[in-house]
Image (tube, rainbow, N blue to C red; front, side):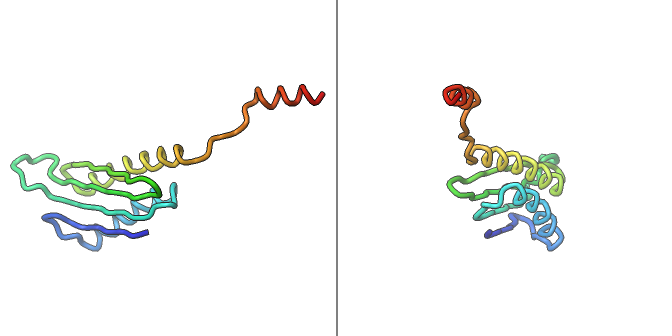
Amino acid sequence: MNLTISGHHLEVTPSLREYVLTKLDRVTRHFDQVVDVNVLLTVEKQKEKDRRQKAEVTVHVKGKDIFVETSHEDLYAAIDQLMDKLDRQVCRHKDRVQDHHHTSHKRQDSSWDAIQ
């Protein structure tokens, strides 16, 4: 898995990097076929006091790119919300990818009746 953590108008400190890595472990625990992860943390230079910290992630899994972004007044809270959204997206993608083909109970019962 290739991981890129970058900051825009922000220095990515080792503690911030470690926080993102621990949160990403939850996502990779659910779905291990993650190829590439790009995390972008930004501080928006606006007059608006709330929702100035923004976190974005692009996850490249086999066959699809998943993009999630959140903003909050606290960067750590933005990362928490980001990973919650990403976890839901990855779980939904995993459910779509998994093979749900199985024989129905009707078909099994009718074939069982034909044998008897």
